[in-house]
Image (cartoon, rainbow, N blue to C red; front, side, top):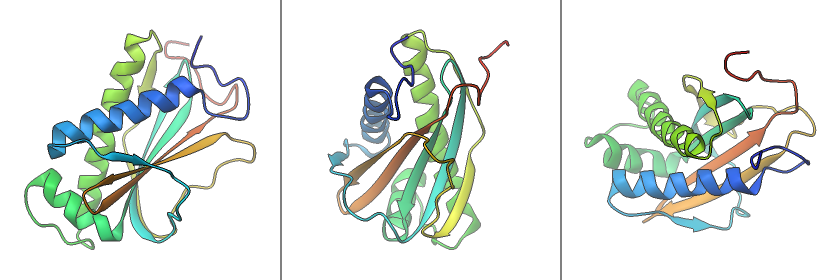
Length: 168
């Protein structure tokens, strides 16, 4: 299977699938595709994170982070009305954004005959918020800009045996 986690790195096919999904979904939602940036810049700071896990032929996590400075602007572009960063609805918007992205990724994986089921989104908000992953879990960070806004997308894989294929 081409999406198999064989080493301590994310399969190139999965990283490309997620990248292409972000470009496509953001272009559909915001009217233009974001620019993929070198993710070497510091992503630390205050923000809102939407996390969705995938279980099936491959087991992995998708983490979509909107830094505080971008969250209100992107929420307005997504929802069509102003939302304060500290409002409860901000978590709803980030969760829905992650959910839409995850649904597109599931469809893209299905086209490649990779079956996965996705979880409901989990939302975290705070300073330097990121789930702690087990040692040795492969991960890959992507950064996108849309006008003056930034979005960070991190994918993290799971070791063999941490998830079950659908129907087993």
